[in-house]
Image 1 (cartoon, rainbow, N blue to C red):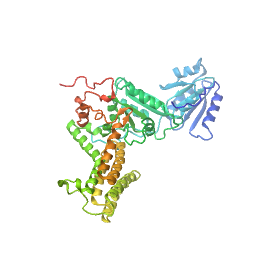
Image 2: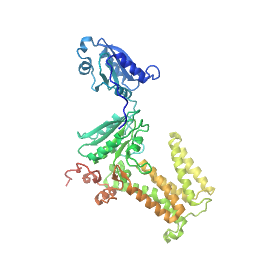
Image 3: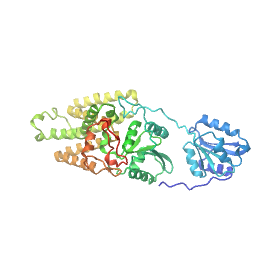
Image 4: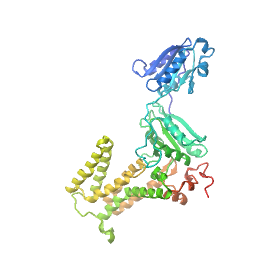
Length: 494
């Protein structure tokens, strides 16, 4: 559990509270956006503490108009109780007597009201964070379906999921992490579906974190709870689509949301979850299955196409007669092995450059990389045409991978496979493939096998991965999640 700042109770005298707050927050000296507004309410000295830019000014002005009209008798005999129960026309109001907790709430955008002679402060939630409208995520676009996506505001993201799951068993559990950032994290799960052991396992991992801040939001949190930093394969699934998050909740997963991030994490997951896309479920089952197979072929090619071709091109003895055409027809000044390594880094360099290139020039950047650099490299004998061909095919496989994290892991694995095959030929290829399978087989996502249902083997579940079943046939939830309610469809149509 994160260490807490030493608590300080609200003082009875308003001046002592103001002195503590001014010293703690440098109000009026450094922090120009932290406002301390003193005024009289019902004849009693009072003060509002809030952060400019994080509150709804219209609602705040309305509350001030109401409070400043109160008379002394309106607040007797208990001012705080009278304010909360009768005077303040607002729903989200709490009381607190911990000054440090009050400071954290104010820095999160809430308004604290201090009244002279009272040992409790009133916390009013009239937050209004700068937001953008929900838009379709760039990485998870589909041809048909909803176009909304998560944004950087946590409460809006929760609402987008609640709109799709109106189940009273849906739980939204708030946790604060980070001694300095005090970041808001939410665990979402369906109580009578998700396994209690999974929920408690994820919750305990989060509560054990002792860090001062999480500047990279969900990624910092993932690295803190997923473990095994040397393993490139993602142990959580990221999504920016509310419909995908809702579907995973109904399967029995836990969804983790972090404030300021438009991506949510789904846990636990398997390797095959990263190969699924919402597009498959917007078509009939046969078409969806075809899309799934094409995508899987692209991912498989991104692993093995170049290493296998490199082996066959450099070791002709492994070539059967009908594949005798494989191999470079032109000689280059560099060995094939080095050509692929350079092309591998070149492709990633162009990809990174496109991220930092203004949109109007992105197309021009692609033309420069593909036509000018590639064509000239072949002309001067730096590359053979086949190297550029197969590197381009690999690029298509990378960009067809639904999970961006998995596609980047595949790039690391591919580089290792190229190096091993280039140096050790067939033994290198076999060693690389063996290490890859061993790594995947021993990887676990929050304690669950990463290659389920292949390892451990479960035939029916494996069939459902390769065949996108129609909705009415998706009767059972994934077995590895150990869900409380396993039946998704109580009575399949006859």
